[in-house]
Amino acid sequence: MKIKIDFITNSSSASIMLFVESVADDLEEFKKKFNEYMEHYKGRYEEHIVHFWDPNSIEQLTPHLFTVNHHTSMFNYVTDIPHYMQVLTLESLLDPMNLLENYGFKGIKVKVKMDY
Image 1: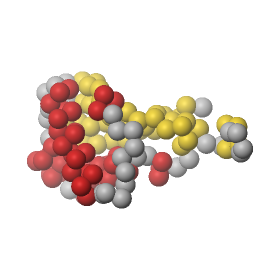
Image 2: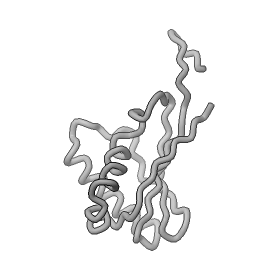
Image 3: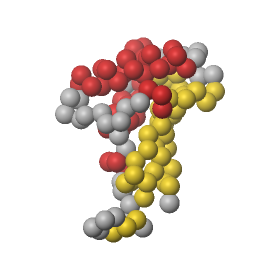
Image 4: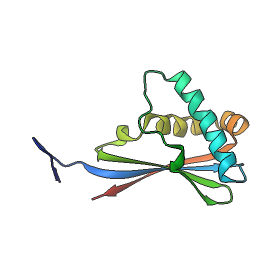
């Protein structure tokens, strides 16, 4: 439980990690493709402003596995996951070939780690 200045909440902060399996061989190549995806996303979803997007939040875990990290101070429900992560996850289920052909993304997973 967190006590704020004028209310009490049961919300917790959380780290949200987007795992992307990619054909990219290195971090710079992946960042380039992920930034291309983000530009495409911004053009399609203008009403969803991308807050706190930081390309430096991308890390390479293994030769073809990357993570995009996001932190939120108030996590209540799945809707608190950034919209671009929600859309990318859904797109990976509905049209995986598009993501592979255009961005080299082979698999997408999201993990939320609560910071109690």
